[in-house]
Image 1 (cartoon, rainbow, N blue to C red):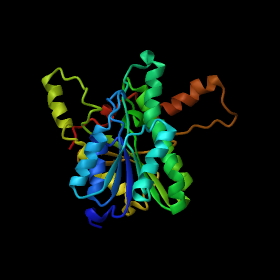
Image 2 (image 1 turned 90 degrees about the vertical axis):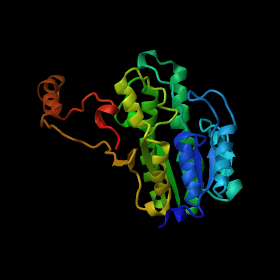
Image 3 (image 1 turned 180 degrees about the vertical axis):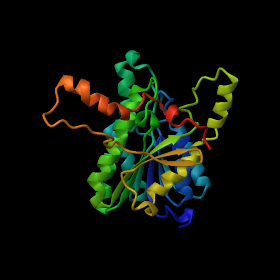
Image 4 (image 1 turned 60 degrees about the horizontal axis):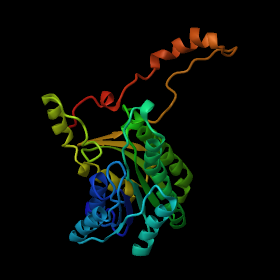
Length: 306
């Protein structure tokens, strides 16, 4: 199946598509034959402000490719806004075939210093946003007996990262949401998968550089452009991925990963049951050999991107 035909006739909503990963996904979807709803509120990285400019600029870039797109500036954090995003696809192109839940903001803070507002704002855009847009599209997908969801998760949630309790909780929640959607809608021919992207974008451009070694590392990270994420998103949205459902992938420059999902790794049994004391003496020592170390994403992905 040639790339330019892979999304022929399909209509795709991409949230947070005014820049970064979302923009590159929208552009490749269009180049692959899709008609695209480019959603972006035009906010700052922290979620402040509102501008129609970024979404409209991407629509113009898609038009320059000879493809069709429309802009939408509703917020995914609001259920009514999410319904309007999906309705934009129906009003403009008569159908909807894929939702790419990419919109996001950051409010990084160590947990003991995090405010309620910082917690709520990130959960609202990432987790509620993914739910809201997915839910708005679900009835249409079920009725037509087809549809695909592509959600952006993160190794911050899947593995861990410092000062990102809000973001990590939201992103791990998205993995659970995606699996539930996959289970609930599989019989209707609807699929749901996640991508954990590694990419140099506005979201990680705030990394502090205070040594030559760090500067060299950042240069390597910059090779991980948002454009490297887009091919997997297009594939997962297409009929070529009809047998791929409920999975979590990661993309890191030219590397593709399938990410494990929680399963039992070791067990211990005591016929008479457990007491707190026997857990301390027997149960926990038996399980400790399989404990996961307290790692962050960079500890697990410890090599430079290739």
